[in-house]
Amino acid sequence: MGRSFCSILLFLIFNLFFFSAYSIKVGTDLRPGFYSSSCPEAESIIRNVMRRAMAREPRSGASVMRLQFHDCFVNGCDASLLLDDTPTMLGEKLALSNINSLRSFEVIDEVKEALEYACPGVVSCADILIMAARDAVALSGGPTWDVKLGRKDSLTASQEDSNRIMPSPRSNASFLVGLFAGYNLSVTDLVALSGSHSIGDGRCFSVVFRLYNQSGSGKPDPNMDPVYRKKLDRLCPAGGDGNVTVGLDATPRFFDNQYFRDLVKERGFLNSDQSLYSGDPRTREVVERFSRDEEAFLEAFVEGMVKMGDIVSDKEGEIRRNCRVANTAVLGR
Ligand code: HEM
Image (tube, rainbow, N blue to C red; front, side, top):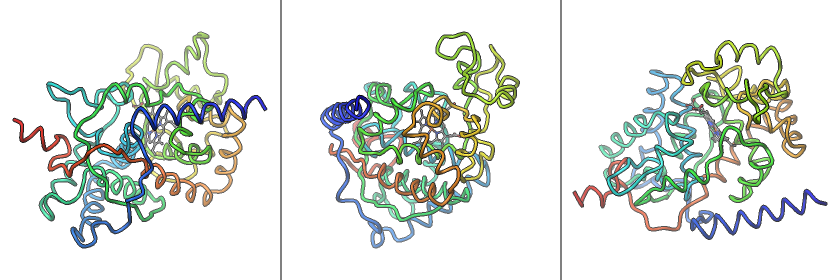
């Protein structure tokens, strides 16, 4: 009773907070095939650039896929994340969760350049992020799906909003359930989307507190397999280089359910990952199911990505010519 009342209260507070303060709504005008007559080659151009980028650097798939999350949660999927800072605007790239961490922006630049050559002024950077994320998953051996398109690019970005919204690696499952509920994303969506950590790496910076001083205890997180902890101790010694990277699961270049099989063995890398199994019965049940049933995970993941892509801003937008700069800023120079 206490827990469900709290959940409902949290849900209402988050809805009030996000949907009123940030003018976020669920996209209704988006549709598959939006560019089928205006830029029929768009999807194949993006797939080819992604294929080349991942051949050059396999991790870039994960890095590009992560951009969708960091874009969509901050004022909707509007490519605000991609804007560089200007003298009058502090953008999102240097926000707490992004600085020294988000990467592969140059892959999106490469996609945009190819699209501007083929069909100038047609495909938004916001839609590029959605298609590139889908392709990154497919090219890592994961599922593919139809994406809804027709988003506009924002005219501005907000470092402050990103700082306020994006979750830290220290977050626990209960907090994340509330955060995701604010976007109409269920417990299953949260766990499935966290399964994106099936690919990619994290920095020692994001885990050292768990290894040496969990919750200020001066001790490691008890919810960590001792063998896995020894491995992390070796890779991420106290006072060592925070930029050393470690796979987020045991198969960091393959999109599969290994992440969940790791979590049930207490081999999750981030506190926010392990907490989904160890910290809350609502998320634990879903982690267990996905660890046993890969198909169920893949299906829920696709559903979650589509739902996350439906978070759109209702602010004015444009089709940027360069994903890093608003068109008005270019004209104003
Ligand atoms: C549920 C809350 C989440 C938290 C707290 C979180 C946090 C993090 C952190 C701390 C890292 C490592 C960053 C670093 O050490 O530099 C990371 C990496 C990553 N995240 Fe998340 N994340 C969450 C959800 C998601 C979602 C929903 C997606 C995509 C759908 C995603 C995709 C990724 C990917 C692919 C990487 C690896 C990127 C790379 O190798 O460059 N994450 N995340």
